[in-house]
Image 1 (cartoon, rainbow, N blue to C red):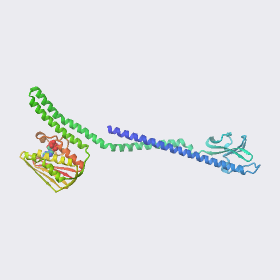
Image 2: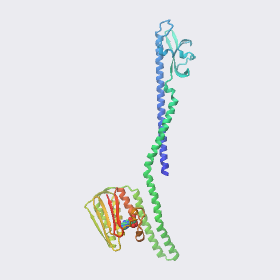
Image 3: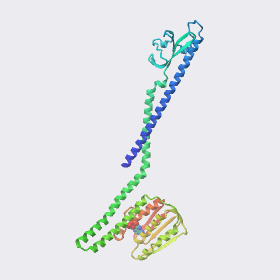
Length: 390
Ligand code: ADP
């Protein structure tokens, strides 16, 4: 839920940014375009005025008519210094003369026109020339262009929102999964801690009630020990969740031999023989600490779940796999799909042997982090085979 909200917020902020960017960009372009339109209008009007001056200059003295190109005739007015019209194109017929110089926008026959008023002095004649030109489309269509800009910006922003949402969601997915795992882990951990804590509580209660403190404290100490082992394992698991692999090329044969050596005593106590066969100097890419932990968990299970009368454990290493085979109590078919779940323990194990059901889930996680596969085959009363495929 919280990740959904964060995704929406990221997408929203991103969209607002893009929308603003589009607006600023669009307005800048519109302004530049408008400026350019004005500049060109001024150029055209000035050029037209030049043509009129040319006509005035070339007019023979005393001639009544002025020679103007046909496309200009309607759009020109010439007045003398007193404001008396010397020539009035049809466009200017109903428009009173205003001697203010420069370009002005006027509505003539319901259409917007740019009108340039400019003074002249040619020979003995002095006055003003006015030239008109229809406003260009750009300036006229400004409201429409702003409307278009808004519509396009909104459409692109909506698209950006959904694309942003998609990217935010996929980027946050690993964090969301991690959070879910963490929640699950916290729940599992507190659930598992409840039993030994309740047991510790009742041991102390009993000691208080009966006055037999020594027995109570001894029992409480056992509970505390169990709790600390559980906490230690939980920490290992939690660390693994956020573990950054320190992979290196390791001599797996040497590591297996070294780790197995530590289990010889335990195996001996349970009358179990331990054989290690490894191809010489098998090199794999792995985190040595985690690889050792994986071997230890599998070997300690093989010893822990051996039969009362002993048995044999073989650890075999090739360049492609590690196999740990035991002749112990085996795993019931119904339990097989669950043995890698956190805190899962098959019933027989729960009643007879200590453990928290975390060893195999650690093995599974370590394998996953290295990109290895874990396979298991087992038959009740005959034994189990765990294979790690590199
Ligand atoms: P734990 O050993 O703490 O019970 P694990 O996660 O290591 O937890 O194992 C989960 C369960 O799988 C064990 O409780 C046991 O029932 C079963 N199991 C694991 N390894 C073996 C094995 N070598 N032989 C028989 N059963 C096993």
